[in-house]
Amino acid sequence: MEIRFGDLVLHNDHQIIACNKPAGLPTQEDKTGDPSLHRMAQAYCKRDLYVIHRLDRPSSGLVMFAKSSAAAAHISEQLAKQKTGKTYFAVIRKGLEPREGALSGYIRKTGSGKVAVDETQSKGGKLAELTYKVQVEIDNYLLLEVIPSTGRLHQIRAQLAHAGFPIKGDVKYGGRRKNPDRSIHLHARSMSFIHPTKNEAMEIICPVPDEMVWKAFEI
Image (tube, rainbow, N blue to C red; front, side, top):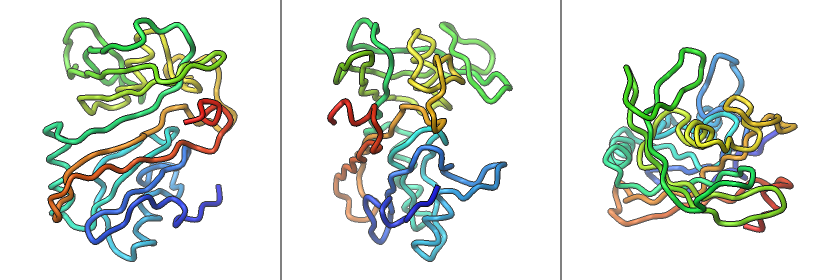
């Protein structure tokens, strides 16, 4: 894909840069050797950047990098202590009940690049919790707002699939069919935090992709 990085920038100051990651672009370099958002952001800023958090390659949305180790540590600590507010949008097929609720389980790696969800703690399992709420309903799909209170690998994907409602396009976790571009309909929508030097509350909101299903929800 041809990307003009400047079009992806949501916020840029002396301590952080926030970007709208397109689906299909890795946050960091991976074994494919494809260009990454991290590398592109560093070229744009003409300096080394610190990765604060990651987003799965087939997902889209907000990713933030820090311009100093101190800024990275400041925001990472907020993430670790759950003092940030991170929201996601996910598209699933209709049928989820209740339309607002919480999911809790134990995430464990399976050794196949996936994770599994257990109802009770097993060897290596880590507690994963999230809340969800239906925001919009269209013909066959629901748009969920999802707020995780833990940050486990593939957490939202695995927990929704475990509940019987895999994310649209996410065949890795039981989706019916792939999206044509191999994306999944999971989008990092927003993040609220305390700025590392200004000590001010900030919220960055990331627009959804310009794509048929996302546009149908008229967000």
